[in-house]
Length: 213
Image (tube, rainbow, N blue to C red; front, side):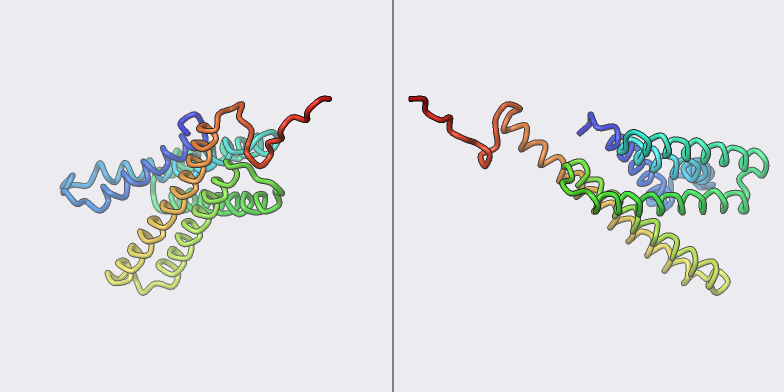
């Protein structure tokens, strides 16, 4: 599985995701000023959507990959321009996060539709269906949480924030579990294929050679 570029990018994405969220919980009181945590969160917010789009691009080929790479480059350029002009203040950060969130939701949905149209998906495509579904669920949940917390919120009360963070971490947990299930299904299939060997035919397709008289 380490030879598949898509899984490597997804691994980096989930590693950074877990690191940022664990530091944000501050179990061990990592930093009294939280400066390092804030800076890491800021840089991760810029890299999050590009990493997901890069994973999607690695999973595609041909025209689809070129299109995704173009969108990725445009997103990085837009993030760089907004950060240079406005810094990391709320309006610019909100635009960056919203743009990345909507792109991930759109391409996750597109990937699921493309998978459904496949007549005989490969093990890799089956695993990516789990990935598309998990990210669609996670970022769809984030969108709903943001709408209710910031648009229909009650002035940012502590109770409202607690509920929002609880839903956020539950959606992250479920998304990571579904992604892991997809990767596990691919690893199991490939390990069984390796055990059979590259030159060994599957049992259901095996034919005894006809006798020549």
